[in-house]
Image 1 (cartoon, rainbow, N blue to C red):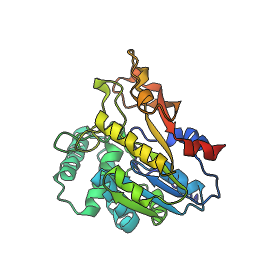
Image 2 (spheres, one colour; image 1 turned 90 degrees about the horizontal axis):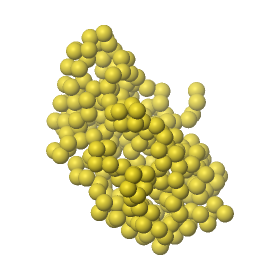
Image 3 (tube, rainbow, N blue to C red; image 1 turned 135 degrees about the vertical axis):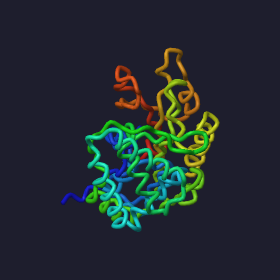
Length: 302
């Protein structure tokens, strides 16, 4: 059985496809000892790559503002067998409805209502989080102004809801990880000598109509992007290496130099990524995204 652990979520904007670009800019080698901190963990693609690749990583710290996401990480770490049992039950029930679209919809939307009540146990809330992620449209996580998950059902006939083998691997990997729920700035408290931050905030939307930014109640708007840049300045001043990813808004017809101006003191790299969350299939495909690094990262690579 492979020991490689992979993300347990489908995630719009996940970083699996950018790992080679991140790896080429990662400031540590395979056997180095360092601390890894991810203030916006999302599906954890970079976290799991670090755990798979660097056997001597001293400490990993993850954080996210999304309470349901962090609860799911905690449940997988601490109660994976009970979680698997619940997910396996729901998977069987959902697959039995594969030929009846109306009953499938009824089942899905009942689970969505249960999730949004926030009255379930922490275990069931985590199971609902994974169920909805595996059955909703494109693995998208989006909430309304009240904080309610509002993504419609996906078109998958018999989606894999319970990947028991990988969930057990994730649980084992997370035994080595400190899991936080809070504001990204709080993570600096966990930095030590030889610390690497990977920052993957909610992306600045490329247009008004393409905003999938409602990731948590309260928008990650331009002022938050500016606050994040100030946080990067703090990390740089303290001698910590960091890599930050974001959208390349300069691709718009009217040149938008928001990030080029904001991070003008740092190295801005443009890399290709395939994104498929646009509802118009003709508009899906490869676009540029940004990987921004500070001098500490660049110096370690030389």
